[in-house]
Length: 141
Image 1 (cartoon, rainbow, N blue to C red):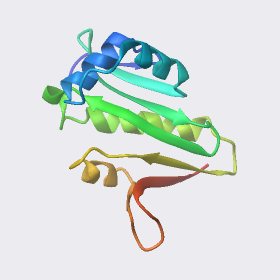
Image 2: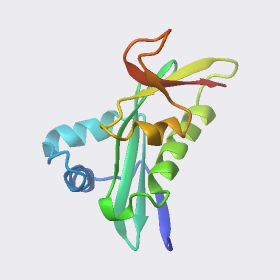
Image 3: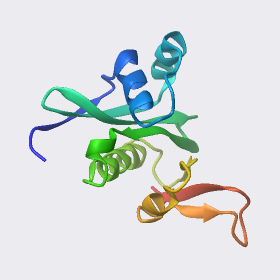
């Protein structure tokens, strides 16, 4: 894919809402979306030819717990490595901005049918023998 541009913390509420709608999550409230963006720890978006085609963000306490939220890639750009790039950039942010010699937890809630995508990136499906419901990854810093 040509002309991919990674944008850090530059997503507008309108772009966010458009992506949510494009993937079938409905159109969120604009004011709520503005506050969500403002309260995010980190936000990455992907632009191709000037059009924002994907996003993902981190929320949490910024020290021990991070949650990957709102990973949305326009359907016509799915299965082309864009989602993987978004998640990898979010995980890179955690690794590069966490306290040395610590372990942090990065969790997420996968959309139905997308669990395998996250498993390929190191996340574990929960429940398992030791953990209850949800998905998470431990990142050694």
